[in-house]
Image 1 (cartoon, rainbow, N blue to C red):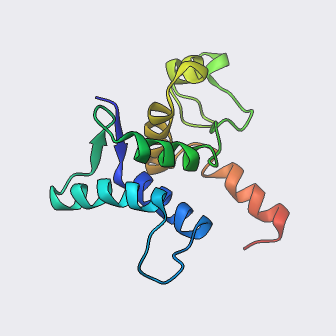
Image 2 (cartoon, rainbow, N blue to C red; image 1 turned 90 degrees about the vertical axis):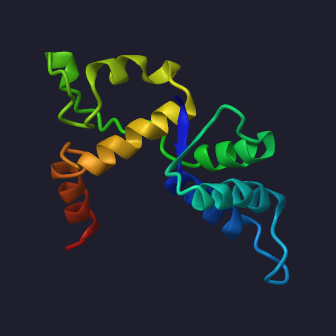
Length: 139
């Protein structure tokens, strides 16, 4: 089942809230309203994911507009799958995910992003992230 996680719905709602704020604190933009309807049903049914099958078209359009603002690939140009690793040390994707990335649908890509972020063990989230902070003068 191809599904959108509730955290992606929340992120899309927040994106649209910033982009099209309520003029009076009550009215919602059409995009926020469409996503909020899906979100409310997810909360009611205690669902963490919602299937894309039957997903309202206006909510999907709003979600895809948010998705277009996210990084397309987790690649950090340090690919160990090309060296024979089943899981890339750089980004955390599997060999198949690296190979099929350009053919994947946005919802599939977000599922991979969620997994590698939760695992947090690839260089993207450890060594590379620490080096990036050092270059910016961070802690």
